[in-house]
Length: 350
Ligand SMILES: NC(=O)c1ccc[n+]([C@@H]2O[C@H](COP(=O)([O-])OP(=O)(O)OC[C@H]3O[C@@H](n4cnc5c(N)ncnc54)[C@H](O)[C@@H]3O)[C@@H](O)[C@H]2O)c1
Image (cartoon, rainbow, N blue to C red; front, side, top):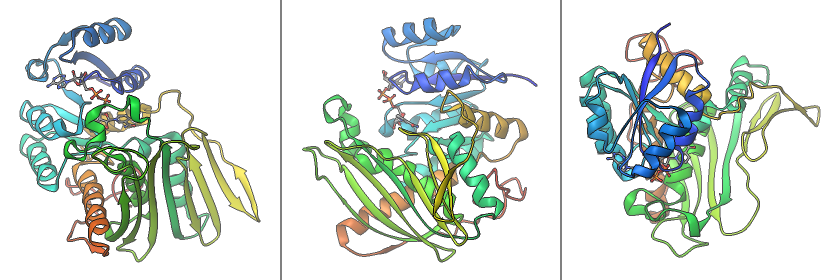
C-alpha cells in the first residue's frame, strides 16, 4: 500500500491534532507544512519530524511531492484555499465549517470536480470511535427504528482566549457556525436523511461579541423524523457533548468529550458498550480520507454533505431572525456515490 503524502496548511492550534492523528496511520505521512509565522513552522517541523516547511500556502501547493492537503485555518479562508488547492491538483480535507455561504460551497465542490480531486469536510464528530460504534448499533437495527434524537455541544466559550475571527459572524465565527456545525452533522447522520426544514432560536446571550453564542434548532427530516441540535457557548457551566437517540426498542447515548462512552438503554438500565478507543481523535478521519482517495470513492463527509450541513445552519439563522420555520430548497440524492457506486453504511447518507 503506497503512503499518502500530505501537506498541512495553517499551524494555529488544531493542526496539532491533525499531525498527531496522521502519525498513528501507516499509510499517511505529513511531508510539509505551511504557516506565515516562522515560529509555528519551526515548532511543527521539530516536533513531528516534518521534512519541509513553507511560509505561504501558494508555495506549498507548488510542491509536486504533495498529493493531499489539510486546510486548517480561519473559516473566512476556507473557500479560497480549497479552490487554490484543487486547482493545484491536491485532494483536500478542509476544516469545518465548510465556508461562509452556499455559493462558496458550490464553487469549492465545482473546483474539486473539475480537477478530479477528493474534497472532504473535517466534521470530526463523524469519525470518533464512539460515534462510529453508535452508528453501527443504529444501523444493525437492534434498537429498532430511530424515533428522535438530541445532539448537544454545550461548553465554555472561553471568550478571553478565543481568537477574534471566531467571535465574529462576519468571519464565519460564533458558536453556531463554529460548533453547531458538529451537532448538525451528527444529527443528520443519525437521522439517516437529509433535512426538509429548520426552526431555530439563535442569539448572543452570555457575551459581548459580534457573533452568536447560543443556538437551539429543531430540524425536520425528509424521512418524517425530527431532531434537536443544541449548541451553546456559556460563560460558566458544565460541558455536554452528548448525543441521545431514542429508538422504538432501545435508547442510545454516546459522547467523546469530556466523558467518553457509548451506552445502550434497555429495561430501564444503561449498559456501557465497548468502542474503538483511539488516543488521537482524528485517527479515523484521516484514515477515511486516505481510504476514499485510494478507493476513488466519495469521503463520508464530502463537499455535498458539508454543503447540506451549512444549508441547515444558514436556514436556522434565517429562522431565528424571522421567527418562522424555514423550508430548505434542496433536491440532493442520497442513494449513490457520484462514481455511481451504491451508498453503504460507511459512506454517504444512509
Ligand atoms: N474539527 C475540530 O474539532 C476543530 C477544533 C478546533 C478548530 N477547528 C477548525 O480548525 C480551523 C483552524 O483553527 P485554528 O484555531 O487552529 O486556526 P488559527 O486561526 O489559530 O490558525 C491559522 C494559522 O494559519 C496561518 N495562515 C493563514 N493564512 C495562511 C496562508 N495563506 N498560508 C499559510 N498559513 C496561513 C496563520 O499564520 C495561523 O497560524 C478552523 O476552521 C476551526 O474551526 C476544528
